[in-house]
Image (cartoon, rainbow, N blue to C red; front, side):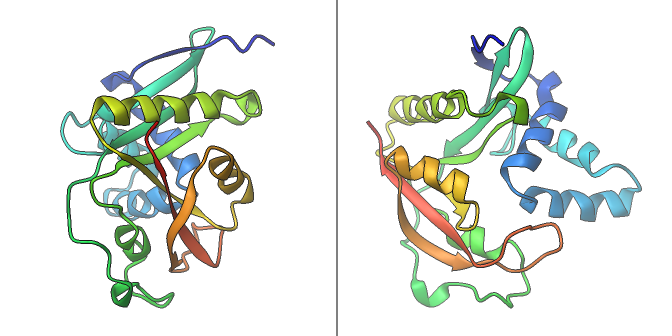
Length: 199
């Protein structure tokens, strides 16, 4: 199978595909909010995700997404955006595993003034061919264009494959926070904040 690819800016029509790939990359975290909204509206959680990424404004928008295609079909995507300047994290504010807010660890692990890789994902049949590395290189290019000096991302420590890839790409663990358990999150232990200087 050919692995020649193209990368393009996402359009509003990509919103459902973005939601599918975000569901993969977030390991269930994004779907928590979608399920809560879908229960209220009696619809498919993916409908909520699609609606989210159809937005023109905000971080979670198709405007912050790049689509990787093979033979005209979407194979993967990158969602990344700049984090605002803020006070450094205070470890005393690190949430505990029994925190009531399931999103608390990821909020705590936001790295101020960094280019944040919110989601990078490939459909299973397109993995293992260097395409994820190419999307990560794109994030570096975006960060450089935006004049950011640091790239950041959050990964589950038990997601050994992803954590290993990021380590090979020069990312190191800056901080960590216990995961607040939830049925949609398949991991236990810690979420890791990994950062790297922009090339």
